Length: 322
Ligand code: GZL
Image (cartoon, rainbow, N blue to C red):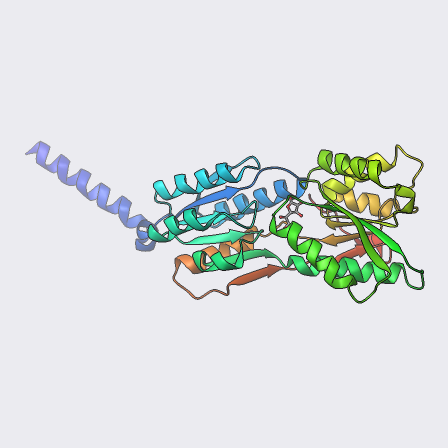
């Protein structure tokens, strides 16, 4: 009898404890998201990764994070491992534009939605993902061209441009190149005399300009257009070892808006920085939530960016945080 009343008390206690939690708390499923990131090639990328991981945590998702160390083969493996783990959704930051068809078809077959972060994949595979969150990159090239037209107003031809592109076949490298060409096509004074790749990395940016200097006299170069700030840091460090003054003898344009580039801009060593905001985590998870709730989402969700240049009020630029 004693034993029976003890069990009844225990049962009452247990039911009163679970009654403390609301029904929606107990019913709420914690979604599992696989996030396949490219690597940590730049400070920009490190901030982007933090932004995504922080926002995922804040939105109460369980994030499985994988860094592919600049290898597409590795990234494909990472995505496959998410499919095998039956995650609820995959966030993919594609290192290059092409080569995703098979793995994304596998995700579709497993009924796992894919959201693309930061870089795009080729148009023909766009039916294989739900939506994209990231910058409108072609505009960044056009904004650079607008700055150059202003800077070189009334300067006679030729105006020689050297371009240090990001990673070969990566969507921002393709679009920053195309964007600049589009922006200067109506002004024949501008000509691109060399275009090389620097992998979006400081060391490779430095190596790239050093190689250009072997085949071109840098004193004939008017503009260096770098596809990101880390490569710009490499280019400036190389030029500072020569008798060419960066920002004065050669006009330097960059993209991203890292603190290092803003410091160079304030020091007059570079001339224009197009902001590309890496803090896209919050926007990304709003979209992720909408996808998981089965809502309609636009195919493209663009972040915005400003133009910082020698024509801006530089003391008004806030600390960048990346
Ligand atoms: C831009 C992004 C680029 C940044 C780089 O959308 O993919 O990759 O500009 C980064 O700094 O490494």
